[in-house]
Figure 1 (cartoon, rainbow, N blue to C red):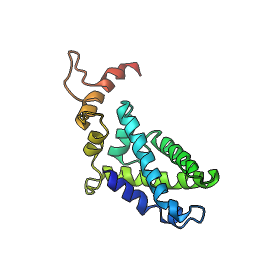
Figure 2: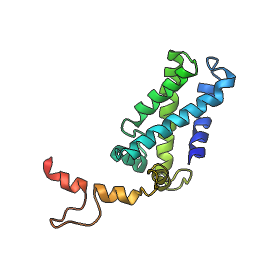
Figure 3: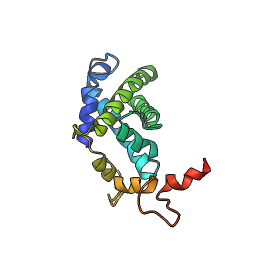
Figure 4: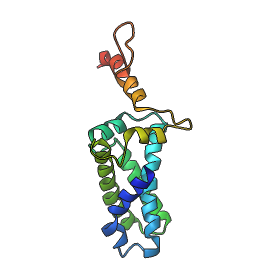
Length: 164
């Protein structure tokens, strides 16, 4: 999965990174690594913290928003570019173009049953913590499915229905 994400970044970075006069050629690979690393860090954080409802929705619907994944990944990437000595305006421009493009394609590929380059279960397992036992079915059960309780409620969403 990580290799596919890095390749997705690479495939979308020609104009923004490789052909960009503001990015020294010797830093092209570091910039690509920074982009994919920023996305991975945010995904890991979201999944590891249990803050995944919007993230799961983005994966399964292919809507490319991921809650605030986009903003966090862009900010992280822009910071990393600054650490490479790339001026703030250039970093911001690259981040605001590259990260949304890559995330949109990433979420769309994950949601596409005909595209096996990214598999939601593999992503969740890879970022599910030290035991790697985090499972999409666990999320589905937690949010809306699973065994029904005494009052016919099955998940967190069922339990919260009455509050709204």
